[in-house]
Length: 135
Image 1 (cartoon, rainbow, N blue to C red):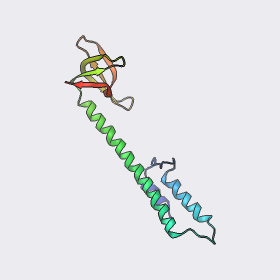
Image 2: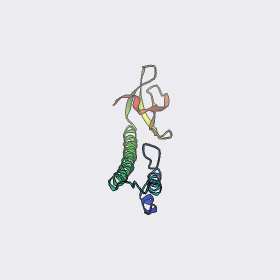
Image 3: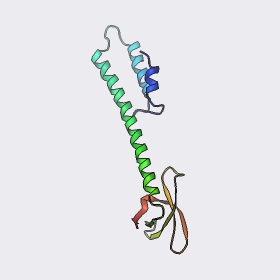
Image 4: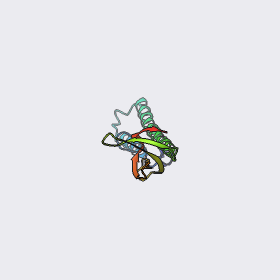
């Protein structure tokens, strides 16, 4: 069984819930076949079932990676749509701060905004999750 063709089809960072990549799971199956008891061979149905489960794990991880990427892109689009708009943000103390969105930053992996208040004060690194209202 050639595993190099399978490994090229999987992403380098796709990992199962057990922290093993698809290539490692295939090696486990091959090891199991190599050291099985010749008097009690692995049932073909069990073998196919294990392969199907491993394939499903890889597909689930791939879907999870794609969903994470989609959510990140959606968050970036929402944040950039705030540029120039006036927002009300609730700070840690519960007070509401209003200001126009001047810039959006993605340095932490999550979008943060910089606002300029009516008094001319610039406040940076505000999470968009704290926005109470967009005007």
